[in-house]
Image 1: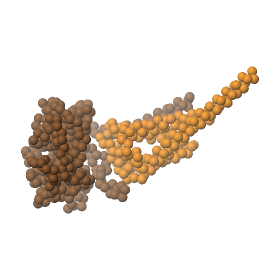
Image 2 (image 1 turned 90 degrees about the vertical axis):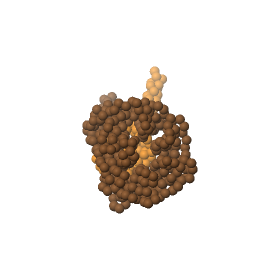
Image 3 (image 1 turned 60 degrees about the vertical axis):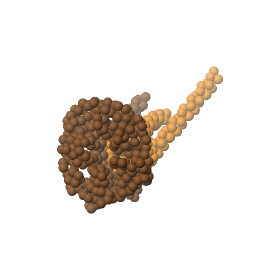
Image 4 (image 1 turned 30 degrees about the vertical axis):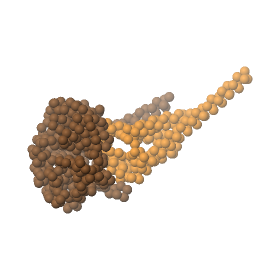
Length: 351
Length: 162
């Protein structure tokens, strides 16, 4: 009996030691995050009330935009766009004769046009111009070998983030181009050079047609930059969570006879989603400040608002979780918020 | 009187047979547990060493252990192989079982903590285990913690009976 008790104690001690080691490592990491909470947010008490919801189609990947009372969604297939009416009642898909092979599907985005959409295949690189009347797509070669982010600033003029092939490190910079005449402008000293093909500086590029400004919000940093349409830096400002450090390190990794560039350290997405709606920049932030209640923070998505004109912080509001799922993407349509969750699409009214 | 003596002897023999049978069952069970643990550690260590660069990279991506990733990338598979050896070699089996309990508890607590508190969850397992979800991995590890505890208890019982 004595021996059993003795071994029971040893077992508890063994498990206890393992738990203590993990607890120590966890606390160390949490403390570092808590140190960054020393900033203030101005919570705007907006009442976000649900109007309607619809089950998310499994093919839907992202929201593209709203036009003529219709909502357009990008799917996992480049040749398929899902269209839903703004009341989320009717859903139908539009199929185009765009190749849906690995290279096209690997990275693409969709830009709505007046008559249809431009499917931007980043790794081909090409633009498939489609219209709602015909399934036949026109193909235009894109003026850069490959690109990661792209916005349209006027008909046939795009600003995009692509690799700078003129330097050895092949960092990503911003270009302005036109499929008919090629690259018309390249930025000068706007992007941070990290020597990792732009992986640790990856982010979202948006265009504000009310102020004619382009805004780039990095996923892993606490700063965002604004450029004019000639790619000159207008300002660079620190987000409200000024204490958060950039956490993303990329480097080369060798595996199975191949050498790839990838994240070599932990990555912490600070600015998960960002979008512009006429003069206001909305950023879904993952950083909690000291004055924010932990439960409220966990059960809502925190959206910080900034003035695009000067980058000034305007306030914060919440979009609630839906069925314990947080918002993956959202957009502002007038006084409404359309939120994309893992399993649902929900339309809210801002009161 | 004579009959009752024979009955007692029979009973004693039966008890001895039963005891031996129980002991054999327990020894077999212990062998099975040690075999399973050895198989797990050898498989896990070999998968990690086979694709060492990826394993090291994945450890580096973990917010908790990024600073010690180079050291742990070697220490974990080597530790697993040493544990496997102590489980195979019978005199050191109890150390192996305690080692298994420690390392499996460590992995279980690590996965639980990553799922609950970490802002980024990379995968750092090799071979077939990488196809398991983190939740499935957690239950898999808990099962092996229980097996280690069972192994220690059986080892203790068999040592005491002997």
